[in-house]
Length: 130
Image 1 (cartoon, rainbow, N blue to C red):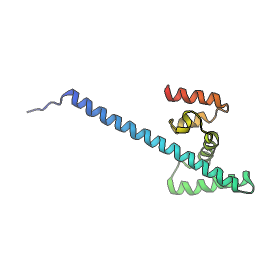
Image 2 (tube, rainbow, N blue to C red):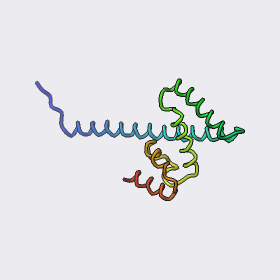
Image 3 (cartoon, one colour):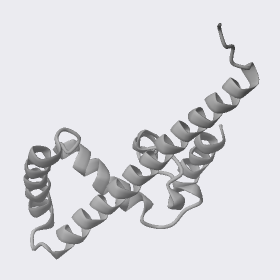
Image 4 (cartoon, rainbow, N blue to C red):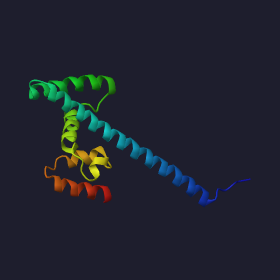
């Protein structure tokens, strides 16, 4: 005897699972974006305590990159740490949506390239609602 599943119960369960996965992905993205912001903040704070900012900052990022890559794997290259630093510098002043980190890290990597704050805010809103 073959038992058939009603389509509506399957669809409801499918929707529950799909929505749960989307929420998990969204929460992970948000948490990682906030973490990258805080890493950038910490780097900037440490650089400001250094005597020779530029040289110290370059060495700091290089040393952090080596240690973090050994401990946590790829994702902590010098370039990535510099992007986290830039992320903090660009977004340390609360702005519209950006203060809540509603976008993914990939979005912010693109948005950080935009120098003009008004233009950047426009594209943040477009990315969030688009």
